[in-house]
Figure (spheres, rainbow, N blue to C red):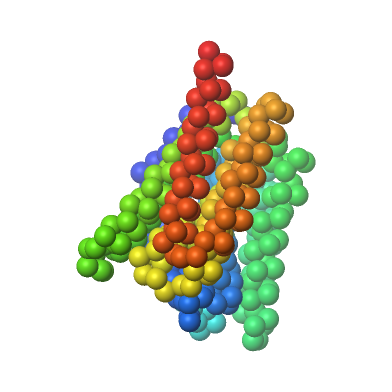
Length: 375
């Protein structure tokens, strides 16, 4: 069965599909740019999370389907285009007044999930053996989740949000519950999966560069704005360095698994990049108090570090796993302890850039030494 997917490569249609999602993610990240009296209100942070999770899961669902069963035929291409229409619906519905736009957002999400269910049902009918069994399990699982979410239209008031996210949680948990019994029988194609998530990550890093460019354009270029731009660029380069240094390393490992560490870990990676984009935004526009800016910076770094520990944890050697976790824990502790103690936004921003740069360089040094030892 591995021969069925061993040739998989990213297609131009997949890249087109990613761009539509990145537009939605960019709009979602902008939610955190709404500060009030020097802080980001708790309800704004909650809305960022609640909007982000369905976007990530909708993208992930079809991405993993294509990884296992993609054929690049006319039906699959049409499914891509149908999903893109629903993504546009979701993106157009993203607003701080989430309740007013809820119906279109929910219909967009459910439409994406049902089109993914259709593709799994198609596989269920066409395939034999383990591919048929996995297609059936995921088709039924995702149909249950989508129907629960859709039933939220029958619930008045804020109860509809509970029903919507109950469906999403069911959708997310059922593949985890079926990992050993079902999904492990047909591993994902890891190089393709890493390439798909890597391309989405680099497009999101492009959004971070756009924040830097806008920051320079919106204000008069002064010494302070140049410093803000340089620090933001250092952060972007450091994330790129760390992420792709790590990704290249695990892509070379012969992993046979359901890929769930990569899949679920990237929820945190993508979410962290949205947070970091807002850190850079507030680095130009000093709309947050130093304390609020510090905790936003801590959140961006810590969420990214945790995600990388999940995604890029070495797969074979116990000693490497322990060293990787210790290295991540040290950088996380430094960020959590030091950043909130700093007295100004400028100092916090500079130390955050140092944390990201140090984390990226440390990973590069470790990987280089590992290659030299292997040789």
